[in-house]
Image 1 (tube, rainbow, N blue to C red):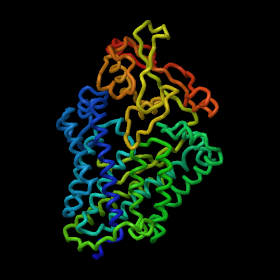
Image 2 (image 1 turned 90 degrees about the vertical axis):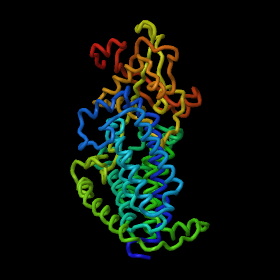
Image 3 (image 1 turned 180 degrees about the vertical axis):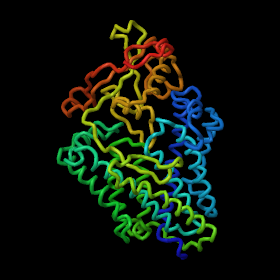
Image 4 (image 1 turned 135 degrees about the horizontal axis):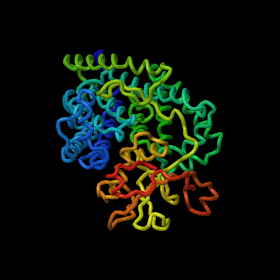
Length: 482
């Protein structure tokens, strides 16, 4: 075994490469299904308009040269197909440059999407996927031992992800410090899943234990990822358990899944075989070629230099959350839910063909993931990401940039089919309505007694009007929100 590689992390390499590739696969399929309606030629925030105001050097993307929905679909389907080969492990059977090239192509393709995705691609897990894809590219193939520097950098990425999130919470809302955050989180999180209602109704002592467990997993455990084995593997197991609980109780796209994948960078083969004795014994890989050692060393040096900015951010008074320090989204700052809202507000969009003063004529559009009909049980969508539904959650919190929502209302009045396909229920299947409006409701979970009596999952009460009834002429006359 050469000094550069380690034979103790072959299973970890398989999990890292295939797992990250699986997340890329989901991300590219999501782009095929949602990008044209949101950002395409006739989208809510068209790319063609965006690239006229933003330089290539500030947001590198192939779409600066040309954008069309057809080109987007070609890029996204090509990325999905390439990611599928990596999930199957095919490039990993060849020379070490082959999976490296495959992951760097995925990185470049998805970077082109993210950098023109505007608010629809402003989530931390986009940068996380790009960084993880770039890093695991240098793990090589089965013809070389996994480079120890890359394995350690995967742990450093996991450390920043977890410790950064822990610090954000500690510096954030008081509810994280007085251990009450989980009294509210399961009810007010962006997109509850089928088990969130049950998690919310667990006893208060359990919710306080959840917060204590979260602080331990994010503020203490990450340091042990760099400890000798088997301590590092135990630390990784704790991260895995905490992330699986988040998977069971919420919809956070691929954030939790890619964190689970990264945790395997701290689990050595010996520990896995001790836990799973049926796993086959690995074979010693040949020494790494000189060109591979040089290339991986240069990439590692670059990543270490870029680590200065997120490392400084961890100890900054005003810690940035989900921030990129360069246009390539490499070596970023992570963290979420520094504060937990105590009340849930939802924007309900309605249309009408009748006199807008007639309340009986209004019918609601239903979204796929976000709460709407109180009798509909929340669904599971993660690791798939419903971008429109997530932005509707931010809209209810008072998001400043609402250009996309104004265009969304206009598309409903036009009966735009790509936009309507993103919804679960279109109450006007024959022709678009004459009017649309948006109302804000406060939502809370039903109690177990209310659930038994009504069968509903939610109780809602109207807060007020966000957008008064509008017609298509509102858009052309420069109307604004109510």
